[in-house]
Amino acid sequence: MNMRVWAVANQKGGVGKTTTAVALAGLLAEDSARTLLVDMDPHGSLTTYLGFDAEAAGPGVYELFRAKVGDAAGIDEDALIRKTAVEQLFLMPSSPAMATLDRQLGARAGMGLVLAEALQRLNGRFDRVVIDCPPMLGVLMINALVACERLIIPTQTEFLALGGLQRMLRSLAMVERSRGVRIPYLVVPTLFDSRTRASQSCLESLKADYPGAMSRVVVPTDTQVREASRAGLPVGSWPAARRAGEAYRALMQEVLELEQPLAQAGAA
Ligand SMILES: Nc1ncnc2c1ncn2[C@@H]1O[C@H](COP(=O)(O)OP(=O)(O)OP(=O)(O)O)[C@@H](O)[C@H]1O
Ligand SMILES: [Mg+2]
Image (cartoon, rainbow, N blue to C red; front, side, top):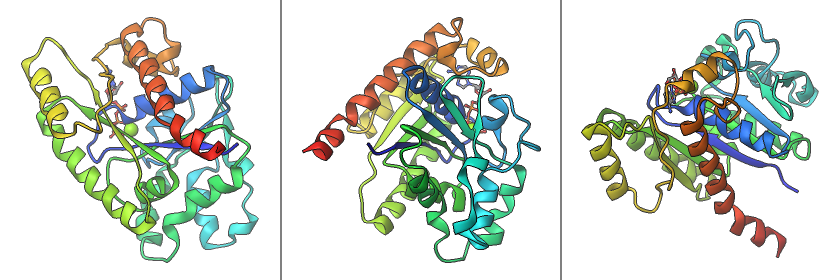
């Protein structure tokens, strides 16, 4: 069976991308899928979240890109992957040096395919891959969009955050044109506070503007989310974060249902 690859991205910072990537991957792993998280953000929040020192996590995404310029055939993907404290959950870590990749490799041909090719070689080793993206467009984000079959766009329910969603969708359209495929996406409202009018009306306008792409799930603001990340555990594995945990469980279910037709088409 083919490995299924989801990317989590938005061209706005602080909207819950990393939290969402860890939560979904944690639930998939709990569901006994061998799951790989890929940290494409030079800031390494995901790597840190899972208890690694991003400055010294050892070989990871950076080395993958460097190897492409040198000797791609010689790279051993196994050396780039760490076991995490969560059973069945693995990590390809980030490092701060990734911030220099755009400058180093941006214009070279074939640089958009580095992650997709690596995942191809890892096919069969994992059931699921979840890619966490940086909040800006560059060679790392492009690689994630090229490698994924589905995009999850966490969107903070706040008007200032809507521009990030629009930029994200323009970038997605650009990658779709160059890949010659449609990449289905799901807009997931996050940090929703039902007590504020701003949250409410932002959610309404999201629903009005992106009717076909809205998740049925809304992730509420839950102060325990930060505690879960402090403990290095996915939200679903932190019982006190019950509200956000339930939302992420429903989101995982929704995405699995969405990919059902794909799986059936493949089996036919
Ligand atoms: N549902 C939630 N309730 C409360 N706090 C949340 C929730 N989701 C995320 N947070 C907090 O908001 C902050 C930003 O979340 P996160 O790091 O997931 O966003 P991001 O989009 O990955 O940010 P960046 O663009 O910097 O990578 C974190 O401190 C996180 O703990
Ligand atoms: Mg992040």
